[in-house]
Image 1 (cartoon, rainbow, N blue to C red):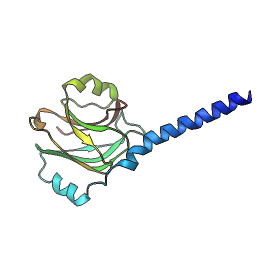
Image 2: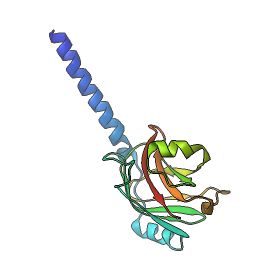
Image 3: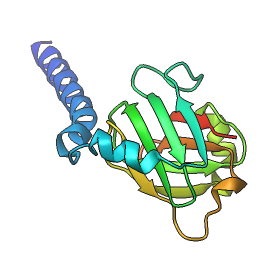
Image 4: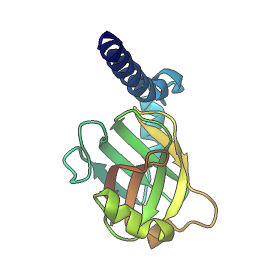
Length: 155
């Protein structure tokens, strides 16, 4: 009986340590955040602006975004905060989505813009050939765990 209890407690601690490591590793290895002045300068002259909100239906206490996102033909600039996590991607979609299921239904028609490496604001260049006016919503998505983080409708 003692071995079963010891095994159970050790496995629980191991699982908790692994989960904590998955959560903290992106924070530890994240590059320095972009300077707020640089974010503001790059956001100037954007064609569209929208807001990430923690209150969106598909967000929760571990998966959320808040702040302003500015969209221009050449870049997407976020001035705000994202919940830390691994492998975040920026997508553009043609309809507003606010849950994991909603996004998965349109993911194959969406445009993958780039990677998010920092959680206190980011600048992502729009790839050549992507017309931001053909889309309506910016989505932050965790590719590794297929988790919806946030979305902001800009038109």
